[in-house]
Image (cartoon, rainbow, N blue to C red; front, side, top):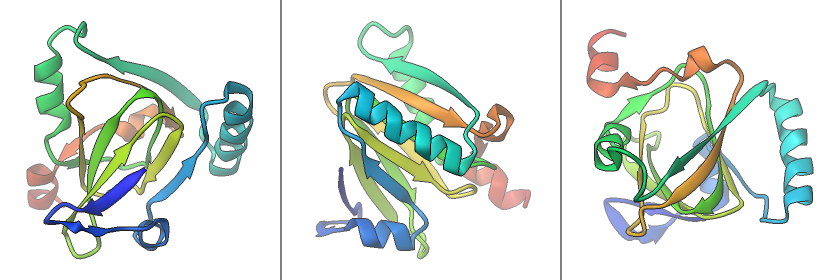
Length: 153
């Protein structure tokens, strides 16, 4: 996982800074058995009850339309949890001072974005990712666009 301030790519952010921002992360590795054991422990500890898998690549119908939608700044009423299984994903997340932080994820990276934290998602130039999403309740994952959220608190 590589993290930095988007406005100033020379400012590298460490895991402690992310934790202070309420963003939790782990490197679970790619060894399936070990990864699944650690993931099961995290799910039990945090109350994640459901999951699904998302695959985006050049064969995904309307990929560019989906990427535009994912890149629109939004928040969720529940945490967003993502485990990268293959490929790479990029989250831009607002910090406490409303600055963008860019977090680049690769296989084995697990990230938890706090509820109601504005963010957006995209892919790197390879445009390929397989990710597992975890849920406490899928209803809490409805995307609320920033413009709407700020005008309708």
